[in-house]
Each structure stands twice: as structure tokens, then as C-alpha cells.
Length: 162
Image (cartoon, rainbow, N blue to C red):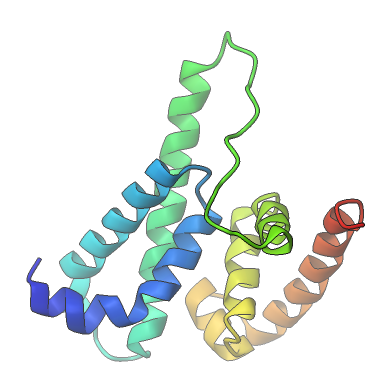
């Protein structure tokens, strides 16, 4: 990957990639692996970007697809490795200094993969239209999903704040 491509086409969108990768990982090591894989896939697929959507939409879509693929692969590997073991507590992420933000991300991780993606895009202040293009559904469906996700997050967080 050329340094120019990374600097001009990936680095300005690093906050998008970081948020998505952190939402789908539980450790710093996994986060770094996911981030690197997303950047590699963006570079590999740069020639097939047709410009039908914004570059940021393309980045979101690749980031989500890579994270979901890696998560499924990791889940399969963990399932095989831990068939006879009792599941241990997940490692607490150390990316956030703000406790409430950490609790929000913990709650978001309890959502389904698609709901996680939808709420992350919503928190990025993407329009329903943009979210629907990234996720591959209608804007009306996104509105309904966001309402349901907010209710679910509220239930998850109710017991966690004083």
C-alpha cells in the first residue's frame, strides 16, 4: 500500500474505521488486527470503487463487511477451541477514559451485528438514506430499527448508571 494512498484516502476516514473496529472487538490486539485488515481491503478494492456513493460510504461498507467477516471467523475458531472449556469473562477494553462511553460501547456490543452497525452509523449522524445504502435496506426500515435499538440500549443501560 502506498503511503500517498493511505495518507489521502484512508487516514482522513480513520475515525470511521476506528469506531467500527472497536465496536466489534474486545481487545487491543484484535482491534489492531481488524484495523489493519480494513485498511488492506480498502486498498485492494480501491479500483472497483465506481463513485456511485461517497467515499465515506464506501469506507463504512468495507469496514463493516471486514469486521463482520473477521468476527464470524473468530467466533467459529473460539467455538472450536472452547467446546470443553467454560467461557471466561471477556477482557475489558481499555480504549475509553470516560466510563459512560465505555458502558455505551459495552451495551452496543450486546446488540446483533446488523443493529450494531445501524446504531454506529446513527451515532455518526448519518442520514437514514446513507445508512440504508450502507446496510442494504430501505430508509423506512432504518427508522424503525433505530427506534427499537434505542429502546433496547436503554433497557441494557438502565441498571448500569447510578
